Amino acid sequence: MNILHQPLISVVTVSYNAVSTIEETICSVINQTYSNIEYIIIDGGSTDGTVDIIKKYADKIAYWVSEPDKGIYDAMNKGIDVATGEWINFMNSGDTFCNNVLSEIFVAEKSADILYGDAMLKYSWGDIVVAPEQLDKLTYMMPFCHQATFVRAFLLKKHPFDLCFKIAADFHFFYTMYQKDVKFEYLPLCIARYEGETGLSALNYKTLYKEFAVIVGKDKVKGWPLNYTMFCGKHYFRQFIKKFIPFPILKMHRQKRLLQNPLIKKSFLKEDKSF
Image 1 (cartoon, rainbow, N blue to C red):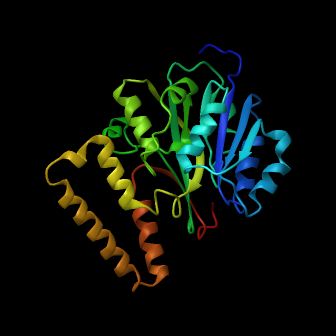
Image 2 (image 1 turned 90 degrees about the vertical axis):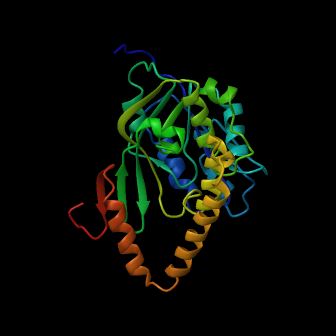
Image 3 (image 1 turned 30 degrees about the vertical axis):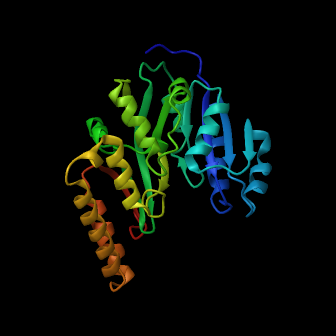
């Protein structure tokens, strides 16, 4: 490895009425031991006290703004526009870095243009560290966590997020880069920690499924409308059944199913005092 100067990393946080989560995210970024960070916060015009917390750390923030936007990807594009770093990472409100991971990543020159690693998902019953899926799954799904990626800034500036997509614009970007043979590199490190139960994608399965289909062209396949109708029907049926099942049982079932995932590297269960 060729040791060289530390590249400037632009970390962008997007927030909106996030008074309960924004401070944890800010502290996760500004407390990194890596010294060459450009921290950017794009707030959507919060009215709940989020801006007051941002102002509290203004001297640690390279750029911040609070104004209305057209959604999360419009806000992320604003962050891309003002970023001056070589790499861009999106660590949105409620998300945090795993320890001082930036100092572990950028110790040597990287030949790839997109870096991705493991992620820690937060659940009410504990946390799990999950490795990405195989990269070739990018042809139809998101195999890694967006928060656990670093992208060369020139790629994002040339290919900003498509605002036609409300939930899957990040998948659209990575799918496009994969089709263009951009070089990806897996880092065997836990990079980001994020909410696994109440995140944007977790709460919008139907929209996510549809946008993925549009991106990869499945929506043009004969029979897809029927498949989508069946998918939605199953979703609504599950939601209906869940109303009659006690929450502790639902939580236990979801925990058991997730812990059977072969991609899980570690688990930190609140019931287990050994963690």
